[in-house]
Length: 344
Image (cartoon, rainbow, N blue to C red; front, side):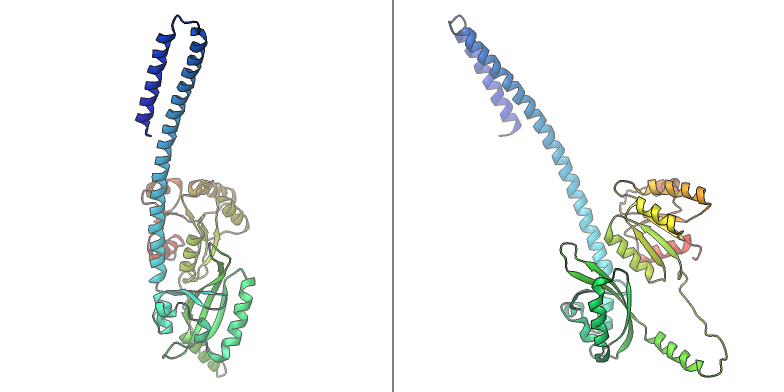
């Protein structure tokens, strides 16, 4: 029964009550019936009020439902973007379980193993490790569940029907969002030319030294970036992008954690999400500015936002030196950090 039908029924009941009033007027039971009819009338009035409140609540629920649908749509789009970013990333990424079985792999990593990604999912990564280094790989795999930080493994990888190469694996233990299964996120690098250079330098060190070898580190090597975001996936993605450039990244999930970290160390650059629960990015920039006055610091700070409607001018007025959308390309993020740190 909808609202109009319910109101119609209320009106009919009131008409019946009025009719009863007329029929009992002047009868011996008039006072008793009138008292009961008046009580019934009061009850109907209460029901009408409850009906109005219910309709108001239903409208509010419809608005909330629409907002949730919009947020869910945004989440789906963001998830697809980050999935595509992982899939087509220029760096080689893969995810394995505790038995070294490949759960996810992008095109760059699959190309290093000389197979299509669809054929590699479910295969054991250890099958691509050289025979003599498999015991070492198994040992590191067994120890990984007790390690929280990023690990570096060096092994020789043997792709299918291709030449083996020296590999550096940056390994980070994680857990599945909806389960307890331990997973390992891996960034795979071909370091063959660097190993050859290392061996050449070792051989040269046994000969008379003619000149110092020239090192060419990445322009961002050694930088320390503090990244603030309440979403774990975003923290991991930004960390992975910046680590490829030699940046040391410290991640925190709230303004409180960020301020605690600033009490321990001074980063070269701070990047913060704008919209966070409890305290947002604007609250953080105000507290950073106060801390800079107290300690005599000047830390370049950038705002990050997942909302297209986010006002860049508002972020700059609040005190951020730069602003970037979360859907920006990794190269834009790197360029922004380089510019803020004076290494553009």
